[in-house]
Image (tube, rainbow, N blue to C red):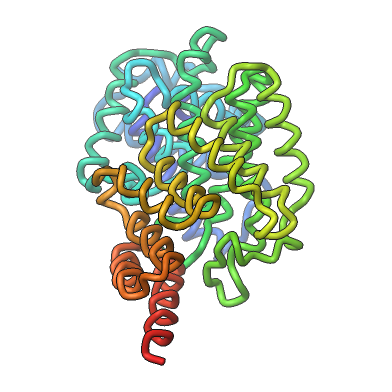
Length: 389
């Protein structure tokens, strides 16, 4: 809906407001009157009316009449999916990569400002200002709503892939709330990744990202138990994994790597494939995973990759090796609970129960994900019970 309105009327802010008003109207009318035969058409028509009424009520009819005169016939947009065009528009070259990603998460991914702020480790007010400025920059640029030409697509592709990666991560591992995952976000990220892959089938990183999503999403059925609590990878029932997604993802990453230009999403997909091929946790080839994380760390210098390499080092070479890798982080991830959680796990493996207990409790206090909080609290309680006995 947002993409259709922006394409036709060219005003991002007003279109976003009109979409929200149409959705609110639907929530009020549909329970009483029933869902219309064409829900999307009803919503679009309602949003268009709200948008035009808002322009007229603001005394801007003269300034907007040319745009309104070009309004297409009713129902013309209902058969068209503007999501891919909206995705590339949000990754406009006038924006910094951080602003483009934030705007796309808001407009295309449907994440709240608070969720985006958590993903970027900044305050909610700061993120709200960033999104507002991004929309203003796009409007000031005067760029028409359309899918970019091939050379423009290549320039915007890194930001597009990054935003899809963040949307998927928020869906697969929700940063806050009651649920372990938000399947609707994961599905939307995969749908968009398939669209991008279809548009650029020979781009190895677009292929690698789609493969990564499929390989990770294949595990989702086993990631929470019947009570909705988190089940870590090493304890999951692997018979629940979606083997069709594993096969598709593995084939994609193998084809992408064979092209020669290996990027970060292909490496992450290769790591996911090693995990997914292991029939049991004990059969996981941790040395291969450690080597792949080493390459990924050299490529990205990302502290989250270093954190994951620490786990791989512990599993391949012992907990002391993992703790040594953790010590190289130098406070680069102080704002997240994950460092404390990983260090607690490695200390537990090393036999330092007291230190592990303290850090599990600290990590549980920091996370805003309730399933993760319960999981960490259970780990702490188990250690406390063991120490007491």
